[in-house]
Amino acid sequence: MTIYFVIILTAGILGYIYEKIDKDARAVMNALFTLYFTLIIGLRDKVGVDWYNYVRMYNRFNSDPWRYDTHELLYKLVNILGFQSDIGFGFVIFLTSAIFIMAIIKGAETAEINPYYFFALSGGYIFVMAGVNYIRQGVALAIMVIAFAHLLNGDKIKFFIYTLLAGLFHTSAMLLIFFIAIDLNIIFIFLGLVSLIAAILYLPMDRYQHYITSNMESSGVYLRIGYLFIPGVYLLFNLHNCKYSPPLTKRIYLACISSPLAMILLSFISSTIADRVSYYFIVLSTLITIKTVSSSKKNLDSIMAIIIFSFSILTLFLWVMYSKYTHHYFYESHIIEWLK
Image (tube, rainbow, N blue to C red; front, side, top):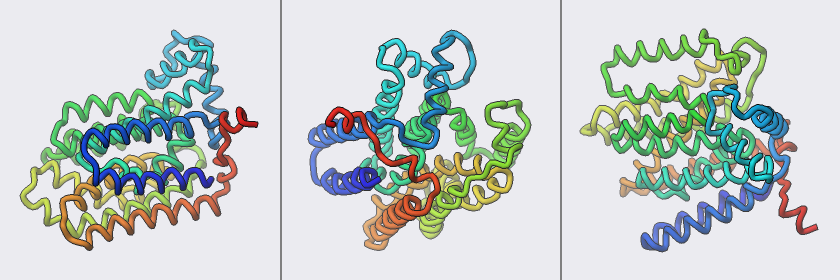
């Protein structure tokens, strides 16, 4: 498990260097870190609780590649390419790891924030707890970094396009389409949220209905909600900063501030659904928090970033120590096998 902490701490150090170098040097750093991350994480083997579920999915996709058996068409395409390349499931892991880190860097830079600080603050969640295990949603989360960055920049069209791309890796990302209307009249937003909840509860989404109808629980949701409270409180006390901002920015602030409470309420319906959705709010809250900290000259704001980072690392440490699933995340790699 040490390797995960090393990668996150490396990102934190690189974040400091990133602030001191020019655009060309940053491009070289991005390429080297992408290679470093992809070689380590992309060559992992049998890591994660759901590893063998994804192997079975790989076999199912390739038993009849032309059959329409999933909405997650881009993820299915990656699996088919893996089979056609004769590399196998390892191709899926390698390519999705590369997409994951490239999308995070691209998204953070689109939002005009330091990508390594973003990764360091949120990596314990979106990288270790989600990306290493939830291969499909890990890629969707990374692509949503780009989508949310465009939304923060006021470009709804690109937000819509990238959200659709994320949804083609994991359907849950499609739920975030409602953000495109977040600056509309509050009545329309309310009606949209009611429709969204109705869709989650009643549409015949046979692959996801068991999250609600079964006794599945995810105690990890409280770790995610705990993280959301910190940027939520920080943004609440900085709400005055967007006094003259467009309605879109104000509503995004309010969405991040209210996200912990929203996830608590959603957890009463299904802690598993709340857990999966909370990762997207971690992405959005971290993006807008770093953006706010970066635009501030106050030392207190910089301290807040350190607090979030410390909480993230502490939570990851506690998760490693006490989670009953930790043993599934012990790092195994093809590199280790080749060196034996």
